[in-house]
Length: 502
Image (cartoon, rainbow, N blue to C red):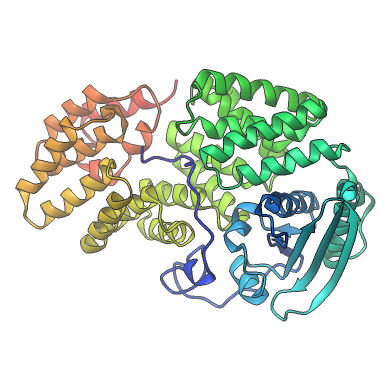
């Protein structure tokens, strides 16, 4: 379904040249050219540590350690820390700190390597001023494998003081308050972070096993319980073979346990909101309240803003608040491909087509092989009158996924503008008789084509027949510019009113 939402697919690691907007700059793309701004003084990106072990099975340690350093440093309000979702795309590019720092908009980068042995762990780490390549601090550690938690504490303290100077009492406490003191539980937790990173279903299932193993070893490991909730929520979006009822029940039990142990876990509140919405309905007030609680606890949680925007936009049709939430998510995480795509669709629905094109370009600069975001840009380009660009984007999306009603509808609208009525009617017939849920975006796509063909009453008949339950993307899709000729029709107005939550 093409709507404001989250998809399991993420972009692969690409070179810096691949993460570019049409003008060659990194995402997010600009509306117009302007002077490059300096990165914030206390901004940093922790690049994924290289695994120097000849055994690829040890890769989990470098990735897990990197993500934990990012998570811990984000707790210091004085630092601007790029999230793992953005940094992951620059894996293996530690030799170009200036380019990575410029692309990520940070003054400092941290790079390092790990070489695990049977009983010893060697770690190399450096804090670098990105524009100049100058080292602020670097160290080589050779520790017992049992000293990982203490080693992480030492690295965190050196990075934080190298950037911000003398640490305050509360900041020191935040860096030393580890989620568990069990090395075995922590190993399972790091394994889980590594497996969950790409958000592929097989990896998510492995991650679930690892997080559950961590909680069996340490029943007070709140962050591991929170991750169980997050992973179950992600699995709801795919075809894992596990019943949705099982995923919801298992996820909610885990988030309840996490929040009992630590009510301040913002990520646990995000997971709870997603699971409550899946269990009851997108309009369940507890889901919105959970997102709001997550944001209050951590105003820098980009994922919380993204899901909050999704709830407001796709289900409530509150475009102004939804776009604002997505803008905040993108400001916090400029490489958040999902939030960028969602913001593009939100701006498109709000008739701000130039802004929508900017965010579409940004989303595709980050995730170039994403069919849903390709369709969004096709629709935006069509609204701007760029029929050639619209056709090219729609065709590109169908090469990635041939079951995209709005991609086919966009091509048909281009055909109609070029005088090919027969091709447009053929597409209508194909969409009406094809497989798939007619109550998804297929319904609004078909109605748009019927309206363009001058069959407004038939378009309304079709909308009334296939309209989904209240919400579920319908309020958003009814706002599309292509349906504007129906906007003053009482039947259409009734559809809009009935699509809203009560």
